[in-house]
Length: 369
Image (tube, rainbow, N blue to C red; front, side):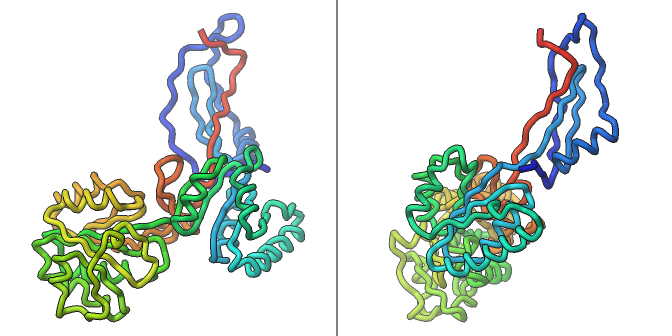
């Protein structure tokens, strides 16, 4: 499959030792002609050219090859993944869930029909059977599949990570926190908490735990005031429970347990943890976060900067709802998922993250001394 790319990368000019050409003569750097650059552009959409003494070093963005994507009950992922993989020059092997298998097969049939009419091999989009055996074969397809991206629940992602022999990029699982600081603006906090929790509860950027500074417990009923309109069940620790009692519907207020923290609810449910300092909030996030999206509500520049520096997550917000963690919202266009790991890609994964790169080095007989 031809290599493609969607975005160039900046590179610092490389430093190398002097290389002697044949006969000991030093060759000057040759700048490719316009025709040569045009020909090279047929291989990749953007080229970074670095002249290094007698060598010409080209950086090419290129496709991975074959990307396997394992997902659950969202048939829209079928079109999303195919379009991104096709645009970035990758073939895709899809493994959807049994609940959406009929929809997935209907969608892939449309894709195959269009590809066939355009003279493209329909095998560039392959849908596997919705069973465990197909998952096992995909996870062990060393030499056939270059990368696997799981999309779905934390249990699915953990299973893929623990059993795959093919490189994996983890996406999706979101245990998201918002910390309301002692210097937080309660008007901003009220809107941010409600939006992050109730906009869409079944997505990975939804709020799971509100952390509130002990000095602001008096504002907690106001901060949570809009949540009752969406029947959000709150699991509050002892200080937060006392602050909300009599101000939040009794049927929707429950004492927090150990399981209330570190849980991705994917529902109209939220935990509340009370802390005495920013450091205590950071410790809670470090213990329970899935490294997806974390937010602070504060008017203190010092607190915001410390939060941004210390929190280990793909997306760290200040006075913003975590609901913005999305490729389209970031201006990246469609996304294949939200990476929560540090290697290769982190955060919303769009076209550039579905490419890798290689160096092309051209010379005229140089050898290294």
